[in-house]
Amino acid sequence: MGRMTSQDLPRRFALHRHEDATGVSGVGLIAYGTVYPTGRTTLAWCCGEISSVSVYDSPEQVIQIHGHGGATDLVWIDSPPFTVT
Image (cartoon, rainbow, N blue to C red; front, side, top):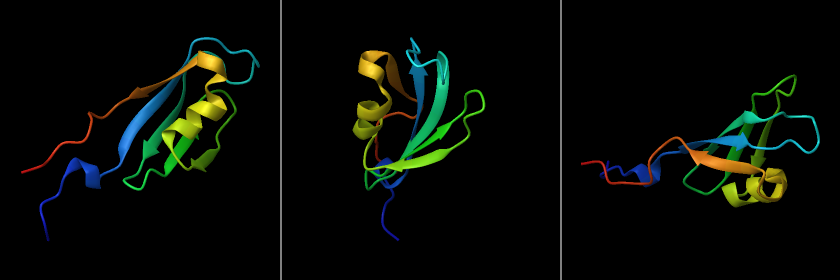
């Protein structure tokens, strides 16, 4: 097996909403997500009664759909990719 880098591992993030225009998800931490090395992205809602998990093509697509025009930030939990020696 070759040397593993953090680029081989999923990277986690949280969605933080500053303003809830729809009144559905609320404000603050609303979802957790994971970006896989292929770019494919999962999003798991953690607010209120919403408990679905969805798959997107990229984290940019998540913000495009759920960002509400800048009212929501994607906050990285894990550091950017690095090489593990």
